[in-house]
Length: 310
Image (cartoon, rainbow, N blue to C red; front, side):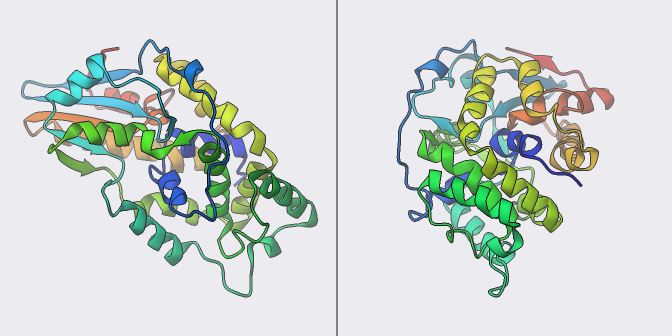
């Protein structure tokens, strides 16, 4: 399996690992913000896309999220706020509460640590070490910072850190805003933390190392890339967002693991949920609701009509 930076960045930024940034932000030695950037360029949207699937006694809203945003980005209003307000239940990818960060940190310690005699940098070639060292220098971190971690976790960390250091925050992420406005609504989850981390932990070590080193090589482009994704999300341009996030997923196995198999599972969940009356607001990474083999396409294959509301 050939794993590249562009192939996986969209999934981390806006299609999976809801709490990856939040967990990192708890570690002051790793993620101390060094700069704040202006978000005004991101703050004049037409509005993120919202869909609805329903039958006689059940309404399910589908809303694509971005798991970290700059502060001050305004999007929670209009039909989105009305849809959540009318819902009995909010559903996110994973359960998110006050224990989420600590549970994720414990899972990383259980699954993401290398043996003491095998530090991370020992898995890298000399050229890869040079690339990795330069990325760590740019982030203001010692080269040893992730020596105890497997390459997949170091790669995710390097993906999130430039965003955290340049104004993006999980606290401003879409799920956090939705949950803060959901009040006492019932909260359900489509997946577990164990499942989401397992997507990466189960990748071959060679693929993990490639992801890590390509992320390091592209460290300067991470924030501009997410800025562009967020702009398309704010404008509600699902096709453009799909082109940015999913079209480079040329590895069929990786694409299926990150997106398509999960989309099929979620579509089946929605189909089953329509059997129970009520109103449900589902918030999942925007990459799952864009492009070919999206959740909406899988719902259509099940004979369900999906209506775009905005």
